[in-house]
Each structure stands twice: as structure tokens, then as C-alpha cells.
Length: 314
Image 1 (cartoon, rainbow, N blue to C red):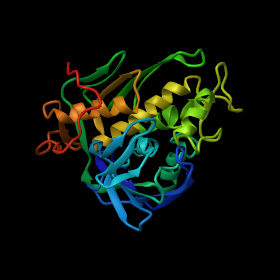
Image 2 (cartoon, rainbow, N blue to C red):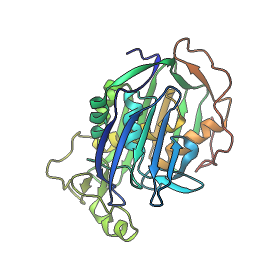
Image 3 (tube, rainbow, N blue to C red):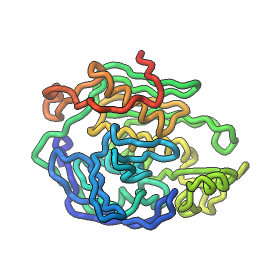
Image 4 (cartoon, one colour):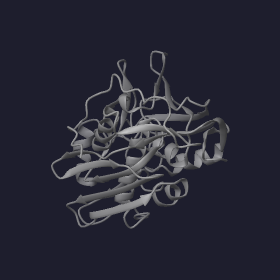
């Protein structure tokens, strides 16, 4: 399969699970789609109405604990970041994601089950060239000690993530890597979402984490990991933050050619950096894979939301 061409799935595939926050059962089906479709989420709501939303940074309605997609009609689905990471990480350009509940299933807390589903379906090349969002100048968003930035690089996408938690189990962890289908599978896809046992009661009271369990969350006490099998990577925590960033940045609408750095970040910061980039037509351009030359015009930027943080463009 030529990387210069857009891709889609060879056949339909379905996975089933529960929402980590809603606790509700949900089926998610990945369907092949035509070139130029992009990643589109579709859901039939309780009233029997079918809604579709393109996976786009302007469709983000909330970023607390998870990335939530919706429109003027309300939320379509939450916790979209792991399926988005799997699709972008493996280079799937066009797919219709059908769900029958309000939240993407958490599966085992990582992107690995979605990777397995994509592998089961297989990928095929399409006739049209792949388009990329190429970063032309640095864009930086900061708040306090947290910041995120996108910088130009000649080719590919790289990520550099740093976290710092006030617990000896995590502390300061860093991860820097080039993101390719092979490295995504090997280094990021199996990293699970994590949480602290001391926060459970407050989350439940807020109607969150109702579907969380040892089967889908890496759970920490003050001094140890409570899951019987322990961690999958020595630094699984920062790897999961990097996985989330890959998924959140997939909302650019095309693969990014550039370098992303995040310090003490999360969904909100990832989205803010993406909004800051797309808000400045001089900060990026659209290129096609065949010639890597600018395509006609920039991506549509009208009607976008304001950044969660004010951009600090360097």
C-alpha cells in the first residue's frame, strides 16, 4: 500500500464495550468510506434521529477528562480520543464510525483493541493523494507551568510529551518519538488510561467514571499500582498522555507534518494548540503527498471556537 494515497478499511468491523464515564454498553462499527470523507462519527439517538459529525477541532464541545464531540444539537459522543489515535496512528484517512451510545467504548483503556479491529478489517489504498497539514511556523499555547507547541519539521510527525505528578509512582516522565504506524503500535497503542483510587468517590458523585474498572483503567493508590498485572510499560503514564495527544491532534482533519511538544498538558491543551494553529492561516498550509507542494487554498477556518487558552505565538 502506497503511503502517498488515501486509505480506508477493506471491510466493516464492530467492537463492543462500555463507556468509561457513562457505564453504558455501546457498539462501535468502523465502515469503509470514500476518498475525501475523512473520519466521520454517526449515531442514532434516543429519538431515532441519525446524526453525523466530522472529526474536526471545531466539533469539540468539552475537554474535561475526555474529548467530547458535538454540534448545536448537543453531544454526539464523548471519549473519542482513543479511536481517533488508532485511526490516525495506523494511517486510516477515511472511515465512518457508527456508535449506538453516547460514548466510545473504553475497551481495555488503551487503543490496542481498536488497532486489532483495524487490522482485522484491513486497509486499502484509494485513488486520491493524501493531504497533510504542514506546520510553517511555531505556535505555542501556555498557562502557568503547562504549555504545548507545534513546530515545523521537514517530514513526518513527532511528539515530545512531559508529565509531572506529585506521586513517586509517576513523578516526572518524558517521551519523545517519531509517530509512524510501527512506532504507534509498539510504543503507544497499549498504554492505558489511569486514575487514582482516592478520586473515585468524587468522580462517581459527579456522574463520571461509572464504567471504570480494573479491566479498563490503570488504578493507583498512594504507593502502588492496584491492578494485578501491573504496568504494561515502565512509563505507561506518559505513553498514554502521548496516545491521547495523537488522538486529539487527529482533529486537524488530516495528518500533521510537524513536531508537537506538550508539558503538563492534556485534552484541553492539545485542543487549544490545534485551535491556535488553525486560527492563523500563515502558520500552516495543506500539501499533497505526491509532490508535497501546497494545495489550492488553506483549510476552512470559519466558524471556529476560541482557544481554551490564549495563544502565545513565538
